[in-house]
Image (cartoon, rainbow, N blue to C red):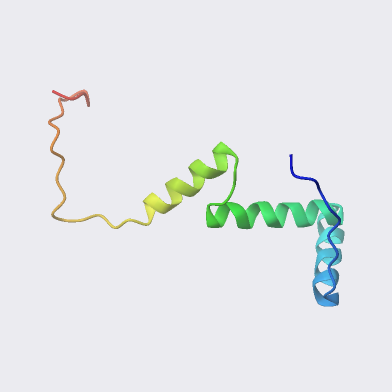
Length: 83
């Protein structure tokens, strides 16, 4: 287990943004920071939860362009099962 430590934000602009977001959402400042970090982790694929990793993987796969010369070496029947 990684010990936790307090986080101090020295940038007053960032502090104001966190406070404004907390007020607008009704969340605590800690919850606002946690949600922002979770969102960024999922965007960069650094999340540890399975759902987030799968969403990240599917997003990456969606970015792969279809190739006109692609082919499927597996033959499939009318029910979508391999022959």
